[in-house]
Length: 544
Image 1 (cartoon, rainbow, N blue to C red):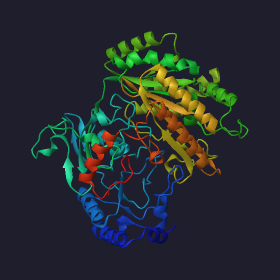
Image 2: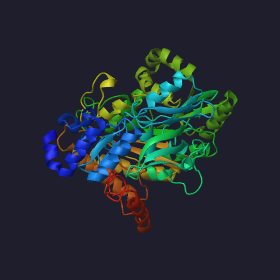
Image 3: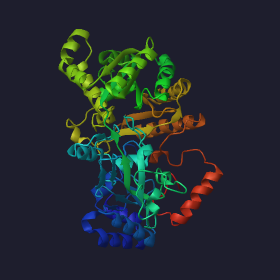
Image 4: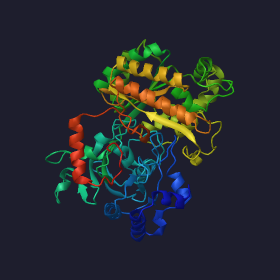
């Protein structure tokens, strides 16, 4: 659809007048209505039908305020994004057709860095890589926590979805000191003690005084987060990465039960990721169509052969230990004792051992037959993420079912390359029984629909596990968009029926969740009636 056709379909005198006002505010270069741009902002890694009439690129908080005031004047919905790399959950695409996209990547200031107390205040355009590089330039004694998403992923964008990473600060929203938020009608609000002009503790004491409401601006359409204070993890004296595996799905509940006390008592402070064999292989290589004779899903004999080649188990654990050398040594001893006889290939690695492994990878392969040189390509990024280092090492897994992919990682665009990717991420109590129940739903449903059940279970906190499920396919294969969505919907219903609700929603999940309680609806709609009576801001994003 061309820009003219899009505008004609959505046209109204109010929309035309609003776009003209946006142009006067931002300039023609930052109000985009050309067909190519609108098409890219309407494309996700699954089928979408939402039409986008314009893309706005403000440069300041004042611009964001003015945009929302214009939107209210002309009753034009606005859908804010940070850098738009929300792959698997909708990318840049709005929840409702006709929403003007407000992209915040030009708001890219690191507003404040406090070297004494270890925090930064950033805007939505600040990415994982930008903040990592900044701290490096400051020789800062702090780490950030990163996700396995693109290094160009927004820090605030992930916080707004209550995402998580790999270090001891893996729960991102739990390590936020407060927000600056533009409300739907253009007012600027600072949370916590920010209600007072001279508050000294606004960045370091998140609660402020009175009702605490920061969470209202995450996973919601009640405001646009334009600044966030992020607490940084002090660099430990020493760290060790550790990994192990089990060789049978039947061992998963016992593995969770063995690890749970170590997470609960603080022996392991990092998030622990437990990826299955499908997940590991998809992170290392593309789909082995030749070995599978073109069949999908991956035949069991090919899965077993690839697992042997890459030396991965049915379930594979990774995590990290932090502290003094004595503290890490003591934690390592407790882990060895707790896991003795229950796991295989328990390995501890620091930076020195990582370099040695890289140096001797080829001789190791010659002796054991394990393709360690290629395995190191995955292991090294995961090791780095436990040290707060962004990586694009996980991005090729989006191309799992594609027959080929760009050779240069910088050229990867899953949306434009028509990769099929959909995520579902249910939360459960930290127990082996719950992990097994979720795994059975995933395995049975995905295989029945023709997809590999690639799963990563994360011990996200001491008491919760998150199960991140990826439906991966090739959008160029006829009928796959529909088949993948049917799989998504079937699995989502089973999760909800069993009480395992996802911790975040993609636009593909809007309208498919069970009804909320009447009390919840009255409470949230009452707030929206006051803040956004015209329903201007991101209609359909979590709240209708």
